[in-house]
Amino acid sequence: MKLSTGLAAIAASLAVSGVSAVGQWGQCGGISYTDWQCLTASSTATTKTTTSTTKSSTTTTTTTKSSTTTSKSSTTTSSPTTSKSSTTTTTTTTSASPSGTQRFKLFGVNESCAEFGQTKWPGVLNTDYTWPATSSIDYFVGKGFNTFRVAFLMERLNPPATGLTGAFDSAYLSGLKTTVNYITGKGAYAVIDPHNFMRYNNNIISDQTTWTTWWTNLANEFKSNSKVIFDLQNEPWGIDATVVASMMQAAVNAIRAAGATQLILVEGTSWTGAWTWSSSGNANAFAGFTDPANNFAIEMHQYLDSDGSGTSDICVSSTIGAERIADATNWLKSKGLKGFLGEIGAGSNDACISAVKGALTAMQQPGSPWIGAAWWAAGPWWGDYFQSIEPPSGAAIPRILPEALQPFLPVTGL
Image (tube, rainbow, N blue to C red):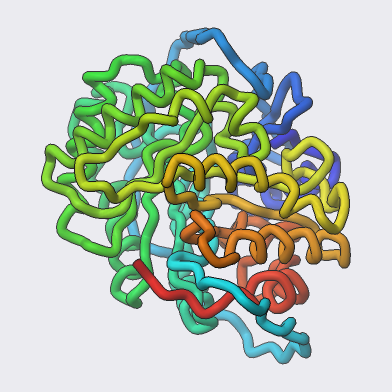
C-alpha cells in the first residue's frame, strides 16, 4: 500500500510514542501503482524512513534484487501481548442477517503486528514489532468470529546469517507458537502467514529446494495442531504467475510429504488480487493446481478504493465489492475450487459499508465457492488507521463491525 499523508502522520506519532510504526499499510499495492512505500520507524526516532520498490499490476518478467544485509542480534521475550481495556459502552445497530445465504466456514481478522519493522531483523520485541493482544483474540472469539491470520516475517524466524534452511530463531518461533496456541486453544483457527511478498533478505525467493525445505520444517512445527492453516506466502508480486504457481505447488507437495493434513491457502502473483486474477495470468497458471490431500483453497485479496490499494477510505461505488469479486467467483466455480478472501478493507461510510456487504453477500450465495474472509486489520499498533478493527476503539469498530461484518455470522468451521 502506498503511504498517504494521513497515514504518515499516524506513523510519526507512533514513533514518538516509543513503538515502531506500521510495517506494511495493508495490501501494499494497487492496480495503477508504479511504486509503493512501506514505513518503518525506530523507538528513538521522530522521523520516518520509507523504502520504495517498483511494482505493476501485471507482470511477465522476474527481476531479482540483491543487497547487503547486516544481521543484528537481540534478546527478546516472546509472548502474545496481553492488554487491558477499559469498559466502554457503544451504541451500535447490527444489520439484519442477509437472507438465502450459505454460511462461511472461516471468518475473522488479520492480526498484523509481528511483521512490523520490515527492515529491522531480528528487531526488538515491543519496539520494532509485537505479538497480537490476547484481549483482541478474546474480543473477536466472543463476537463469534473463528479465524485469525497471523502475519510474521521470515527473516525473524530464519535470520539471514543462516538462511531459510537454517534453524528457526527460538524466541521468535516461541512467540509465534504462543500466539497460535492461544488462538486454537479458544477453538478458533490460526492462519500462519509469512508476510514477505515472496521475498527473503531483499531477494525474490526462487530456489525451489530451499523454499520447500523451509516449508517442510515449518509444517513439522505445526502439523499436530488441527486448527492451524498454512498460508504459503503473502501477496507475491513482480513474478510471473506460472513461476508463483510452480512454487506454490512445490510447497503444497512438501507440506503433504511432511505428514501435515491441514488446510493450505495458495496465493497468486500481482498481490493475489481477486479483480486481477485473470489479467495477471493467475487464472491460467493455477488452472491445474492440485493437492494430494485435496484440502486447499485459493486465497485472494480485495480492496474497494479506486486503485484497489486500500489506502483510501473512499470506495468506487456501493456495488464495487460484488463487482470486483465476480470474475474470480466464476473462475473458482468453473475449476471446482474453493476460495478464501484473506484481506478485505474499506472506509467506515455508507458507500463502503454497502460495498463490503455486497461482496460478502455474493460470497455467501448458495453454491458459492468461497469458504470465508478476513478483515484487514487488527493489531495493537494501528493507531487511528481507518481500517483498524483493533478493540476497543479501532476506527472500524463503530460501524464496519456491526453493520458490514457481524451480519455474516455465525460461522460453521471446517
